[in-house]
Length: 85
Image (cartoon, rainbow, N blue to C red; front, side, top):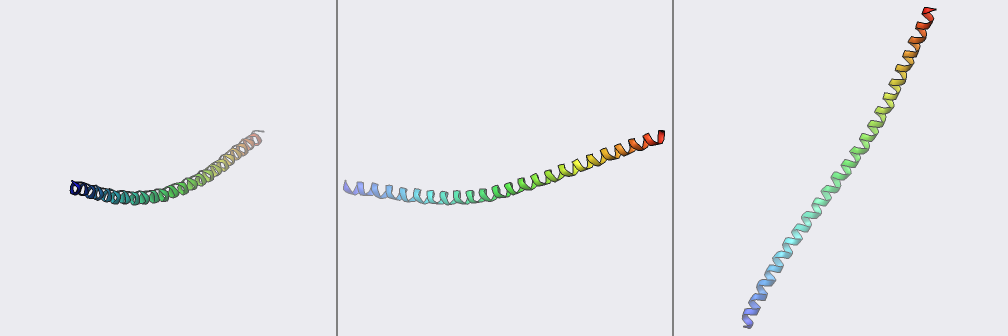
């Protein structure tokens, strides 16, 4: 009877050890995934910042182009007024 209990305890301990190794392996894998996720998040944030800068520059240049077009239209309109007089 005692031998049977010791045998059961031995196998239970073996199962615990095997499960502990699996848990440690999965925890390490999870650490690696989190590390990779952090790297990709950092890259994503940097890309978002770069995109925001590019959009800001684009809007700035678009505004300058629209202003120049308006100035040209005003100049053409003024020149036409002078020519008709």
